[in-house]
Each structure stands twice: as structure tokens, then as C-alpha cells.
Image (cartoon, rainbow, N blue to C red; front, side, top):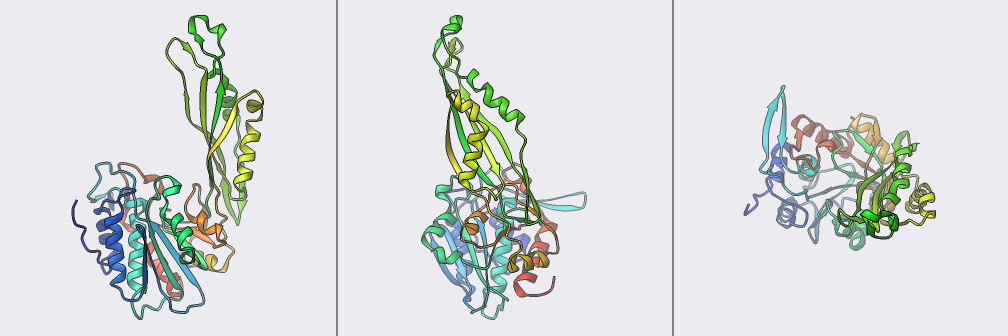
Length: 372
């Protein structure tokens, strides 16, 4: 697709979502869409706008006593023959299908609608607002645009509350889990499989680790009234040389999703304790990725006011999101968006049309200081 259409922030949220979906922005190729977002925000006239790579930052400077940060990523996973967007109706329900409809261009559309309402002269939000549209969320953390903003323009992320418009199906999800990935490796000795007693089978050496995982019982913990359920699972296994060779190397990749009352060091210590017997027998464990979670922070006044404005109880975020970056700064952060997280990254990804306007209305009520 060549030449992106201008984004009309006065259009309804469905039209704006469709326009965003029809502008492909697979991770690493968000530049044209970021250009369109930047142009639309600058045209409003009431926002300070800055570009950091393919992240677009915009904020009001009205001298309000509080500031709310709204954030969303512009990128999607690779397109699966599902662009342009397609509107379908079944059982009386309209759904917009397309790559990124749920994760998270519908959330971006809501953000742009809010910018169009409050980011003009005379917009009069009850809080100063910061909008952060960033790139490369769907790939490795080192490329994450919000992480770069945190390193290079940290002041842009400060506020009394951060709202990440990740897909939550219109529910409030507080905090997020931490996630750790580790590689457990066993060594053996090669031999001809016809004379297997002369070797040591490294794949067999993983049996103890697999038995440990099968018997593992995850912890549940309640934080701020939200229940976080942990999980430790095998997500990959490699080994083998040839059909007639006893393998001398094998590895098991595990993923630990942990509650936010554990920090990164505690999470690693827990995983090592779970595999203590296997490690004592000679296996090695290498942590390849470890990102801490975020406490819900729902007792903070700004977060409590947001929950009241939406008018629905919060639940725990069972997954890792960029709310963790805000939590690291001591900023309460929640996930709230119109998309369905279970549809993210699927070929049949879509968003229910009847989820779009309620999400926008709830945020307008909160940001304008109106009663729910």
C-alpha cells in the first residue's frame, strides 16, 4: 500500500480504527503510520508534540494538578491475509476484522479520539494529558519504543496514572505478571545407538525436569483484591543428532509467569529452587529473559477514580505489558482497551464494534471529571 490517508480525528472511533488497520505497520515498519499520527496530532493546535524514532509523543500543558498518561503501540504482528479491514455482522453483532483490530489499533483509535477532543485549544480536560504512540512492542524488548522513550525522554512518561490501551475486552486489568524464560541444558556422551550403553543420553537427562514441571502446582496470590495465578511451563525442547546417535546435548526452555510481588531476582531464585535436584545432577540453567511485573496500585486515588469512572471491577492482568515500565517509575498503571486479548495475533483477529464507543465514553468521563 502506498500513501497513507490522512487521519481524521473527528471521525467516529470505528472509522478511525478501520483507517489505522488499513495502514500496515508490522513491527519495524511503523514509520508511515507514525508520520500520519504525528501530522494529525500537530494539526490539533493544543498539544506539544515530539517524535522519538517512530514513537510519537504529545501532551497538554494546562497547569492541571494531575497528569494522566495514555499509551499504545502502533505495530502489529505480521499480516495474515487480513488487511484491509472487513466489517461483518453475525447474530446481530458487528465485528471489524483485520490485523491489529484487537491488538491494538482499536485502542489507538480511542486514544486519537481523546486527543481530538482534549488536545485542541479549549479542550479543557480535568487532568493534563500525555499521549504516547510507540513502535516495536511485538518484538524483542531491546527494540521496544516505549523503552527507548523511558531512556531518552523519561519526563514524558511521568504522571499520576498511566492507562495502557492494550486489549482487555472493555475490562480494567490491574498491574501485570512478570515473565522469565530460561534454558535448562543437559550434557551426555555420544555413542552409536546400537551400542547405547557406551553413551550417556542427554535427552533422557531432561526426564527429571519434565517430571518436575508436570507435578508443579502454581501459586495464587491476591494483591489489591486481584488474584494473580503463576505458571511454570515447558515451551520448547531440543536435542538429537541423528537417528542412530545417542545425543550428547539437549535443552529445555521454560517460561515462568510470576505474580508482581516477586521481583526478577526472586523469580530466578524460585525457578532454580524448583529444579534444584536436576541442577545438582549436572544440568545447567541460563536465564535468557526476565522482565518484572507491575503491582496494580489500585489504592492510589487516580487509579481508584478511574475504576469508578469505568464502573466495573478490576481484574488481574495475566500477562506482561508495558504497564511494568510505568510501575518501575512508581506510577500506578492499568490496562484498559476495547480489544479482546484472546484474539490478538490470530488470523481471525477482530474487535466487536459495540466495545469501541463505551471505551471512549468511559475515558471521556474520567478525563473530563464527569460522573460515571
